[in-house]
Length: 411
Image 1 (cartoon, rainbow, N blue to C red):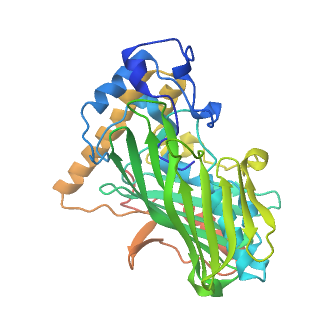
Image 2 (image 1 turned 180 degrees about the horizontal axis):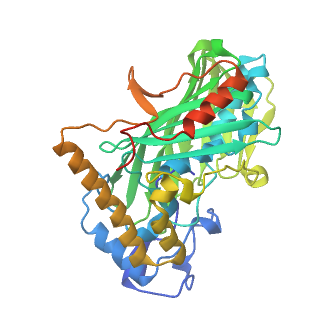
């Protein structure tokens, strides 16, 4: 799941009264969460978390706070965004649907199917450093291909720009993420500003399908069990066809409700045509306002494991600022559960980043992103994609997997 945190056990009791894992009622997950959604921190981990929290104040911006390495998911946020490209069959072929309502529904399916993917326990992806990028290729069963590139285009504020395209399947997705995290007392909130802009290349008259993100909350960091919740309302819209859907990601009430619930209404020219319901971690459905019939949008239990594999260049063939190579020592240390080595590896990357920024500032220079540029209030790719699918495939492949231009090599 493309979130800052995933749920886990609270460090509070672990720091004050160490007990064997799972030894008491208090150590059990909330009754309506999954077993893999929680973990119990040991005494040392809990003490580190409590030491960190003691330095925080309610409302504090967490963008400059360094989290301990044991809460890290071993991949960069730039790679985590690919979770939304895991079920391409849901959107491929949408341009062949004559009904604009059906095309809109297919785009909703693509978007909602990306949330169920998550690591076990309290995990946040690596914060990308300025100039870092991640790229990969998808080879689909029918011989067609998809390509993805993401780049950290700004450090303060942090902005990740990303682009996916499958020319043969007539889909492109352009977007950016601007996460802002704050400490709220017993929880951490992450406001996920930014949007996905989906284009069905076979239906250019549709224009863009624009989708925003819900906010995310890690509850129970001081007391109770730590649980991830997606909350608040995001919007999916296609202005050309008058399509709109406000999707509410519901947080669980103190006394009632359930985790991971969604609700929403689809409108066409201001008329209700469908109602969304279900849980993003389980089954989501749409109910037709006219007929009352229900249809499954996505079944994460049944189809969640059927994800499209991605090909990533081997680390020894990657550039120094390519995500997996850049963070390889941290990833290895996390795999070995060597906290000290992980902390040293993480610090090495971050210290080198600060030194690069310092040299850039002293020289009066300005960082220039390699793959994206800021135009008309949004980040766009530095590429003109040909309309012919075969030609576009070659052009995009050569562009994404090209060598850096002179003067743009990572120092």
